[in-house]
Length: 441
Image 1: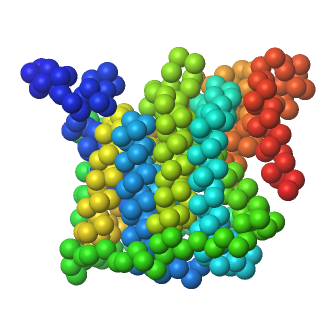
Image 2: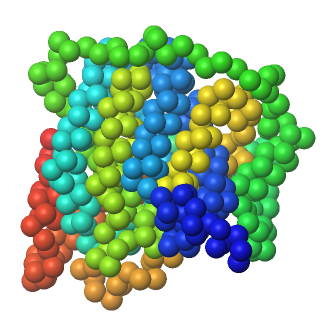
Image 3: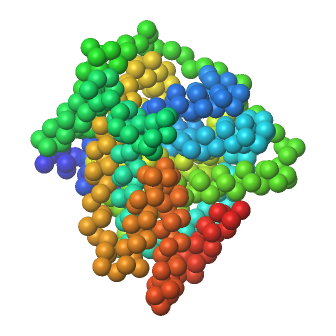
């Protein structure tokens, strides 16, 4: 009681609103570390993907860390929300494999597209256009986004651990992997260990589960001890501010920009809405608190990330793991950013954590994200069908934005065809039309 009274008058409490959000410093820091553990893979995966586009691996590693640190700090200190940001998966693949390899442009051209996207997003956010898009999403679809993200993030965990595979023989789309040995077995052990900790209400269960599973992986030969602990970050100079301005008014730049804008906008919107819904953070109108500040954090992060030398920055769906661990304020994001600062210099230590050790947390976070399904109106089919399509398309298309597309377009069509057009706002009509246009193009 005494410690809670002490916290109540502290700077951290007044700045982040810890007491009013029912949280404390310890819980927020643990939540931030948990988020970091589940998304630290980006430090290796992103440079590996952009290396295929011809970029310097070491430079992109440092650029990835810096972009993550700066954008997540802005999210925590300015938007005061518990969300982490980093170069987005899918966006980095589009950068490397479509713009550079597929369209035949240089990686400098792709970086320029990412930079311009960030500038456009800053303008759209300043004029409240992105915030209006979030607020136009119907309530039942907002709830279904949370559920869809839950299935999506659980699917990512299952895939990372090798429990679910994509067979190369073409027999089935998905198949069960090897769960009697290797990474699949370690992940299943991790689910059991973390599940026991959760059932016993152990504080920091997700983080402890990651650490224990990592240690169990040592005798299994999956966790590899690092040869060193401290290492200076590689030079950023090979990728820093490497823009190419002579093609900015071409059709290819327009296509690249439109696609990046679409993917980033609705991935970020979906993550903000879905995780906020699960955390009970939506206001009385069902809107994300401080959405404008959150979206501006994303826009500034993308702009600065391109300057550092990395692909588009987005709000990470793995933020759900920190929220599941109790994170409710910007202090969670600040803690995550702090861990990435440490990782920049202690990368061998953090990168020893195998994907199979973080997979259990992602799988169980999928469970936590399911609870809003109880609040979805399943009796009115003009509400239930769009909600269901949103939920099911996200994991199956491996895309949050595509799930939102199916949800919004089907919502508008069903409401129109059943005489319930009064339920549709003007903004929702516009968003649905843009979605259809995107697929036609």
